[in-house]
Length: 495
Picture 1 (tube, rainbow, N blue to C red):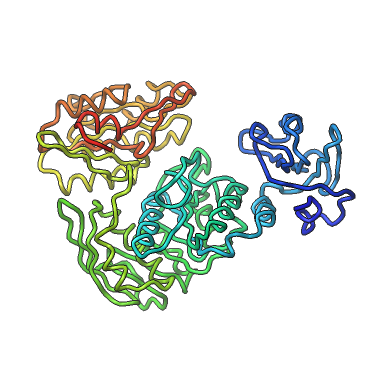
Picture 2 (cartoon, rainbow, N blue to C red):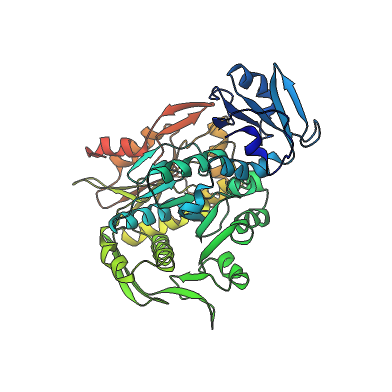
């Protein structure tokens, strides 16, 4: 595509022709013939890296005009054109969509947002589709790619360019169904603004990312954007969540989903409601009724929150036209998700559960799920991320104290913060003056080993915060580390 063709919808007169073979935002990975995008980011200004991109042989630069010049003005540096563009970050999804030929128009694209549950719902959807004989693609926290063959991802929601490029790639591979986790950051930064969603799912809203959004009002506003401003065909809402239930007033055609009989009286839209839920040691049975009929699902996922995740996934596929009978029939084969309430057990050892819970709400729900199946004592190993929302640290400390019998505070990803400062913030949430059941072991692997050695076989150890992650960031450096590998080595299991 030529530069003139690419920018024609926004800039009418470009007095030269220039072939663009790719789009890049990273001057280190930019290639010959690329259009380099220089935006003002949250922490860095891409315009500072224009000389580096030119040195890589990019064909042209598209740069944010704000603070430098007018929209549409063209300058040159070393004979490389620099086109200035107003609100470039906001328009980047549309520009990338135009370059990659609007791939979301040729897919059934599902967007999932909420504080917790995004990854589980995306994997349940992809797994269910696989059981029905369909191939799907996934973009999210654990990775990006065709389901069953993912590449690691850096962010929950990738950049606007990466999303459009990925969707084009999977389209070209014949994939017809794609699922993307949509973070609040991604919504505020317009990374998904030019996508066409066949459906959007809301899981829940609780405290997180207040270092970025500052307060819960702005956090909710970010999530609401997916349902109120973007191009979405079907909306699936968890009405057990107060925010979700409030949103229903503005979404009369939404699918209302509940595990707790929370659907409003005389609700005119689609609905799905659990009638009876039976939790047992190997999972859960969910008897449900819905707009499409009734049935019963058997799943090996544990925890009340996973009941909600299953119901939201089921409702999404039902509203998209999939057979209730086939969905119920295949539900028994749905697999547990890597690092999401993942159970490790070996004879003579305590059961260990690895989970990604890193918010107050997620930690509370994970501990409650453990309590439902624990016959001995509950151990909780957790920390909090550095250079992130500090206000949730004492709250998580209080939650651990309320639900766990033994607590080990350890490193999560301290990043650039002093680990001991994070520990002290967590300890501020402790109310009980008895600290004999609370231990600090900064080395995460040693904390896990200590718990496994000292817990009895009837106990359950919850290791919260990192889940699937295979790294730690300490003093700004990334090291290989995995809770799952540490546990499996201790229990002599294969991951």
